[in-house]
Amino acid sequence: MDETYSAGGDITVLSYHEPAGPLGVLPVHAYLLQGREPILIETGLYTQAQGFVEALRAELDPAELRWIMLTHEDLDHAGNLELMLREAPGARLVLSFLAMLKISRMDLTPPDRVLIATPGQSLTLGERRFAVIRPPVFDSSGTVGYYDEATGSLFSADSFGGLVPAPAASADATDPAYLQGSSIFMSANSAWLHDVDQARFRQRVDTVRALHPELVLPTHGAPLAGQTSILCDHLEKLVATEPFQFPDDAAFRVMLDQMKAEGGLAA
Image (cartoon, rainbow, N blue to C red; front, side):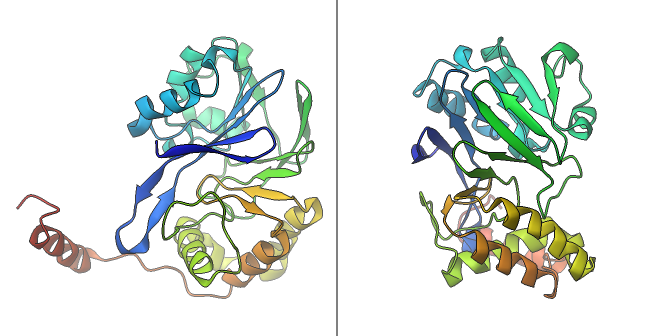
């Protein structure tokens, strides 16, 4: 893990950044919500398990957790789920029905520890109430987002995330570098975005506009405070842009040769 820092109020960011070469870094965050019934949202990358648990323990004893919330089942969001369920035996797991099916392991998702999160419904977890939404963009159909009514914070999963030039505790959505990194990430991560009907997609984005969160907390991106309208406008425009093009095999071989020449890869 890189560091932990406050996103405001009782929300702590457990921060890690995956190097992305000339594109900068890709944040991979989890969020700890302190309170009478502490909540962990996301469980980090399994490759960072030791650092993740150490960072969490610096904030509280994991056994104190009462809720573990996943936006979806991908390993950059649920990578340390098995570990965290052991470390927090009194915690219940919150995720969508489809995410639960995709994990497909009864030892990870025992029915008596699961609470199903369904878009359009609300969940009361201790003293907190969350609205569950389907975020505008996603790479798994099992994705949900959580809006914390107490703090006005939206945990938006992959939506509004992006590559950033360097680790940062906040982001400015008017910064061209942030917008470029966000465009690349969301276009690459949700390739279907460029095939949807613009009017219907606008309705999906309007779900976020209606909530008007004070703070947007993507799993892949720096915290974004007071910038909902800018973020939504930017996301709507992506529908009309060209999809991100990944390197083909020839370009991949050129990249490998460059890495070998620079000493970053064994010959």
